[in-house]
Amino acid sequence: MTDFGFALGTTLPDGRGRTGVIRTPHGEIRTPAFVAVGTKATVKAVLPESVADLGAQAVLANAYHLYLQPGSDIVDAAGGLGAFMNWPGPTFTDSGGFQVMSLGAGFKKVLAMNTVGLADDDVIAEGRTRMAHVDDDGVTFTNHLNGDRLRFTPEVSMRIQHELGADVMFAFDELTTLMNTRGYQEQSVQRTHAWAVRCLAAHAELTRSRSDKPYQALFGVVQGAQYEDLRRRAARDLAGLEVDGRSFDGFGIGGALEKENLGTIVGWVTDELPGDRPRHLLGISEPDDFFAAIAAGADTFDCVMPSRVARNAALYTRNGRFNVNTAAHRRAFEPIENGCDCYTCTHYTRAYLHHLFKAKEMLASTLSTIHNERFTVRLVDDIRASIEAGDFEAFRTEFLGRFYASRR
Ligand SMILES: [Zn+2]
Image 1 (cartoon, rainbow, N blue to C red):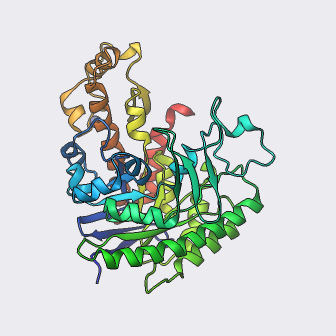
Image 2: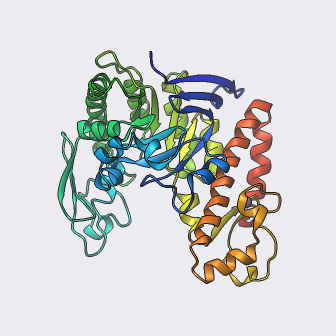
């Protein structure tokens, strides 16, 4: 018996998009849901109490960063990620694969691992040498903090994620990009599958040896880039996988996704996945992407963008995105968004935020992040409510029409 489960709620008429509830040892997540990103065990600039107040149901941290600093053994000794960062609710960790392969390699324009046929400057940031190498067993990379050579394998990622103690973990997968050749993508999907088998085996062993800890769910990650046959096969193979009596508790949809085909690609994958397990789409936060991915059957999402752009004064409203540090807002004694229920909008004006950014005050990041995270969490919550109410398509047309009106 595990403390993890997923209950289906309302389904869209075409049978893909749905609502549901993910049950974890640290509470429930009503889906679709946006998960706030706390890469280094903190949602940058914001207290955990504020993260809860703005409606976030879960927080996602990064295994690579926490392994390097402070060390996953420290987080383990503190009682796990949630206890360490004073977040009582559900937590996620990603596998570290993306950071090992992207930060480690010093990527510039593209995140290609197969560099044949590409000029070095397409792949490697100027002045940096290639720092990550993938082989069938794992990845060797350079610690970006001190230059040490380190190695991640599926077993290492599982051990780190068990020590971090999040409710949801992801299998270690290989990162590819749209720049990779079809041949390389095929090879990579096979490698990711072989790593998934090893992750499940290591997970089974760690779950047994750490049976005094709350159950941690493991999601397999579906790769395959823009190729329908690869995506479908990868999803089918992961869905049917059972190792040592364990199968994946849910699934991540990762890797290269062309924005214009996002819904199509997510749809191929969810067609092949069992309906009774949750699906997490890694790394999206644009409103049109949420609607497309949710219609195609994705349940949870995470992305650094809402908080990252907030720290650069870019704020989301129902009428689109704007920069509060431009002169137009110097005397704008109105909230970021009229009617927004966030702490920032109910207490402060655009003019005050404009001043904080100009004066380079730390509070600028805090107040901006609270608003953008609230905007993003609320949008996904509203989409969930629209599915329950049976007016998803009407809400989609109305919201996107208004949000993107200025682009037309
Ligand atoms: Zn607000």
